[in-house]
Length: 400
Ligand code: FES
Ligand SMILES: [Fe+2]
Image (cartoon, rainbow, N blue to C red; front, top):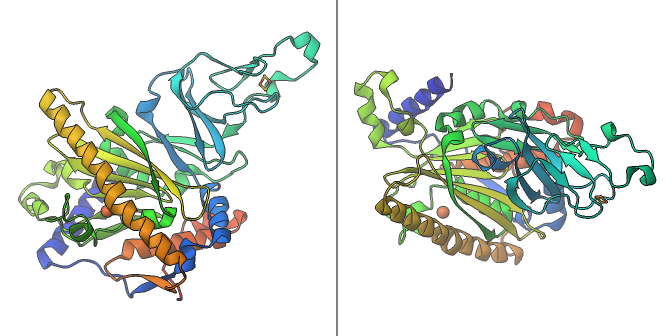
């Protein structure tokens, strides 16, 4: 099924490439500048978006074998991901049931047991409480009801989503809206994680806007990679998630071949964004790679952090390939920090001055319009209506 959707998107691309057109949104949309600067709104976004929705917190290749684990923090929730003996990934709040000490220091590793550094209570990789220090003297505690606190988790397409709320009833597969089937065309579970780093950025939405925006590529990035890039985008929405691609003349040659022979790597190009906080940008330096960017709101409205991971379909086999990948990694770091986020920090300061009532997203920037419409909808949606709110498409309607 996912292949038929990829082919349909390629045909859409071919039609627009031939016509020299793109799909345009009905109107220019304005987003109030305070949406990027208001601390109260920012707190609401943390609570209603980041603490309520599944977040992409890891890739399967980070914990490939039983006993592999990763501990990390996401919007104030300490998270422990672990692959159990049955091969299933589980997610827990990374804290001890005794008195809440952090169970595992942040980072990845392999373990058969997790032993709390405070009083040595221990848990197995399924989260079960298996050891209580000096249990006879401590007193009676029902082990079966004092395992690690579980968080909803789903592993799909070589990616791992966790909802950072133990009480969440939202079905993660429902939230993914079939997008995971398209992402499975990459087979990320067989890729290699080469590099990772963290970059500080402006307000998370200001930063995220840039990942949905091809309009700026030949302008802001003219001195690095963008001079020859088209500035026109085609957007495809699956629930709140959006794939961004540019009209691609290389696809025209596919038309002469049967669809079954269209290579997958020509069908899933572009940028795959995952609401609310992830971008997967595809590259080809001879070896197929992606820059996977996970954005998280920072401590203040004007701050965010981005975890960048560089994944490649096959590991480099020669010194030459390694050098090409290293150069690409350096370039991507420079582009995001010195061009995108440097611009973003100046936008942030400008918006905080209060001089501008609203920013605009043009008819050619439909992806940004859709993203902000989803943010707005989720802020307005109460918990009991959340599942239903994720089903219907949005239309942007902002007033300056
Ligand atoms: S807090 Fe973990 S054993 Fe006491
Ligand atoms: Fe950019």
